[in-house]
Image (cartoon, rainbow, N blue to C red; front, side):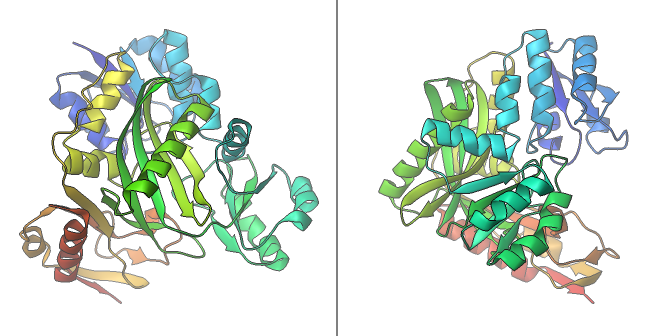
Length: 394
């Protein structure tokens, strides 16, 4: 029986934990929280923070898995890479993991490799920020170098706004500072990738994104396949492959975020892991028939997964957008689930909890996932289901 060690046992990693069990693997999980939802599904548990690289390596040495992986979150990749290096397992190097989790190092790697990217400034300290702020061109995006889920992201239109937003963005950093980038406008997409070698990079899907827009750009929906034209999609795929090579991802998954500007596709950032927000766990299999979760685990075992598309359908996820206030009731969910094409309706907040303004992905109420013959129809199914659900917030 193969053993896999999954870094993280939250709702984000649960699809991998459950799939690993379905495939007959022995599953160990690492999380700081013994009450994390994925712990009860696993065979073995290590109470270690996913950010504790040395702790992750120690647990991996004790467990001796055949593969180490994570899903949907960036920072655990440093522990994954260190454990793979220590045990001689298939995975990205610690250097690649660092570039894929530090936005400053990442955009510098893009620049060295000639991958299209926005103009940028990096400030690791307040002193560095004070030195570079005079050279910022507006509008600009400021974000922490080492966060995800839109935490700490701010759109700024002037020096005064930049200075006022510094504490917000830097306060979300784990210590790496901020990156200030040229604001890019245009359609935003992500590219879902599995690399089998440096020159064998498979693009499984290009995903269209819907965000809240300024100032925080929190993702509120995704759909596949991209509805952009074939020529644009080809250009996106080329830039995505070059980005993966720039940070040294030679084996395993990648989630590459791109904005299609008037000058062509430019990189936003990437992760050396599967994408979150149900994109790779749900939409990729619904639109292509490819099990990306299994493919990622097979890569971790040093095997070549089946990456052959089985069909070409539309898939979409849409997140509920509700007012600020306390959730009084959520009704008609079963009726909405019965709508043809609806594959899942889930909520991450409960009656009695308070809804705030959406500043990050954790502020969202829940989502609807749908499958149809094309992306347009899948989006319509999501919207129909959301309209059918009665959420009362006061």
